[in-house]
Image (cartoon, rainbow, N blue to C red; front, side, top):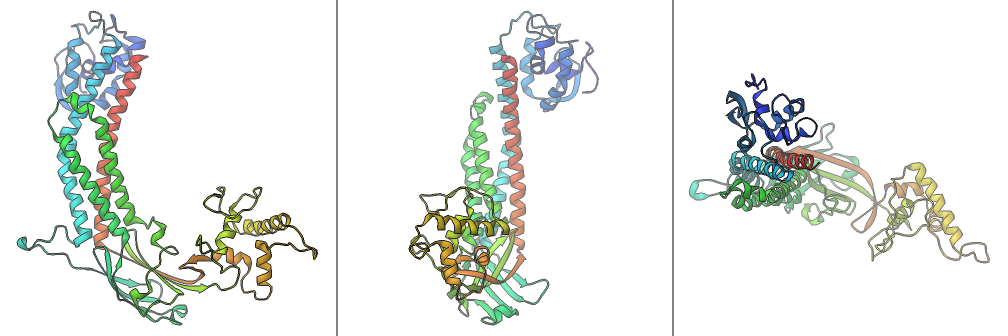
Length: 475
């Protein structure tokens, strides 16, 4: 505030009486305290400036013009001031003060929603609709022959490894699908079974469809909330909906986060190796069991991931339980994740494993020995001095005694269960290509999420300040 009133106090100190109330316990008091010249009121002034910056008014006490903007709610407090700025003739109770503070908060929320949020909602809804159309039609608008608006052309993306000629080709994305893919492979592991790869059937990009569904859900939230946000009502009525207002923006923000994350990383493990199995018949030539192909989105780029696999046939590592779908390796890992002080048991749905930290190489070797000792001690010994029932480590030694290709630690650390087989990855080729449409959509979603987050933060701030003032008055 520039200048001061005739009492020697800056204009905002004369106006923002609710801030004076929040600091009156030590210096002003509700009976007989003076507004002007009280040290405690000066201390509350910086907080007042931060809160009340809205509309032009004059000093309520001295009527001097003010260059500071204040909320309309402050006029409510002018009736409480005597010409000398005293509350002594009114005998204000804490209940009345809380009611006035609530009214002030109601007015602020009403002003913020009507003057800031509501004018922005049509722009937010329009931006979300454009994002949805871009993901579905490759164009910002819905195709309409009467308006000469056509579907956007498919997005052609180059496929090339940067540091080698291991893979080179082109792929095409149209909406939620990869519709074309043709690549040449120049890599010894793959060239034993594969020199080129051509897509015969479209492959769905589930992340794109998930992002579009989340965007449509966010658009629906805006449409559904417009009724109570834009309906004419008093500030007091609007305040009664502040919880619904806050919940609405949290819901909107959650949908936006889902959409952004879908285009950022394949957060669902089922979308990638080893849980995802792309149909072998989708390609020409048909994929052999030791070739795995994944297509997904990462950082708004379309990625193709090829793996050449070694199929493990050595028992017991290659054995898979048909009921649980878990391999022998999976069960050993479950046992090794148990704390050393816990008796080893194969993990099932009814016997959840105890959470533990990931094991390093030294831990794995130590736990293999622990498992061996535990099972040896738990099983009875026959006349020959050997366990009468097979143990995990005993099975390992017996099966590997005749044919040993990998150390037990290699099976534990490198094997995964994929497509009903136990495999190791021999070679991996991963190439990503920036998709201009996905980049554009992600950028728009990022801006919308920031705007909505700001709306929510400001609403929560107003509500939090009101609660803080109520507690101060109560005290």
